[in-house]
Image (cartoon, rainbow over all chains, first blue to last red; front, side, top):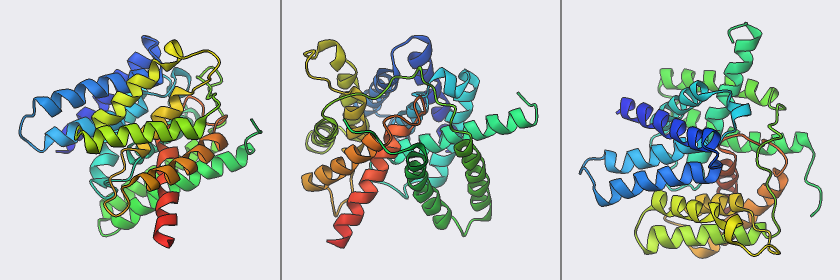
Length: 128
Length: 182
């Protein structure tokens, strides 16, 4: 299950990041449109597993990571890593905050700040 | 529009929101050593991100608008209706509102300055599904706090992913606190 969460997180963040920054769709459309498509697919054509609920939620949350600008995120590799961190955090938190609006966005915000922290550390130790 | 708070207060506001989230996460997982230490390590790295967060992306889309409370409340209520009353669920509801909001600047009347990001932020509040609170008065109070936070953070953390969701989460926490007191 953690692999599904990680892969979905990476996909959600990367697709939204590409649409936002490279195709210039802007952060809102870049996040909302792919999430809407994924949500509709799993709603109307369910695979009858618990992933039918989980995958759209993780994809939607990870797409908030992709709302970050190029300048803040750096490049698409960092967006992938941030998406993976989102997937991992979502897996750890599970359903503990279920029903709280904004939980996914907060997790995405924390993931982005972690990326910023890693990049700062990388510069300090000449890793990037 | 009045001037928002200074940079330190803006940072503290978001830090409190993220701190509440991380504290809850760590307390809930304190029995699991690995999870606890992973969360602690990530928190330390996140704090480094906060310390060096003044690398704003000034080229990022700035938040501008005239009716933030109305925009946030509208986004929240439409999302709630689509999610609960139409039964399509929070993800489809919020992303549908987001897609609609993204096209607003292109079709709106020029004199009315609506911020699509505020509507999208409101849609996250509308994703609420707290069994004891889920009603329209809760959404309106959360939207009020959302507008306050949105105004406070309008010039900070530009270009950061998850900012709108963090605002929504903070406003839902504030509304929950008010409702639990009442």
